[in-house]
Amino acid sequence: MISYKYIVSDKQGLHATNAMSLSRAAAEYESRITLTGTKGTADCKNVLALMSLGAGQGESLELTVEGPDESQASGFLKGLMRTIL
Image 1 (cartoon, rainbow, N blue to C red):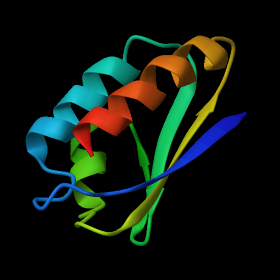
Image 2 (image 1 turned 60 degrees about the vertical axis):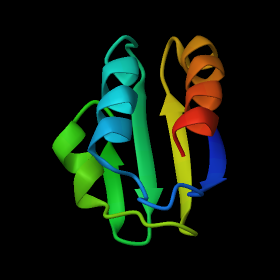
Image 3 (image 1 turned 30 degrees about the vertical axis):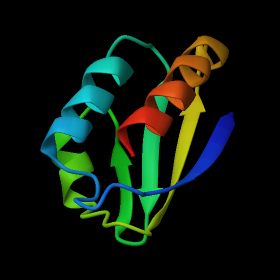
């Protein structure tokens, strides 16, 4: 299991476009990929679950990747998260 913490810097928070980018990227991997915030944990392969987190600017989020391709997935998603948040 690999995890990273992020602080949402985007003024709009985790909005639909960013959630869709994350969801599409996560769907490319076999590993279980989740994002945890103050309102719970969401499956990153489900855009609606990501939106339900309601993550706003300044909120801390933790991305967790667990599975057979976790190294590859976490490497890519780590960079993606930096650009979308």
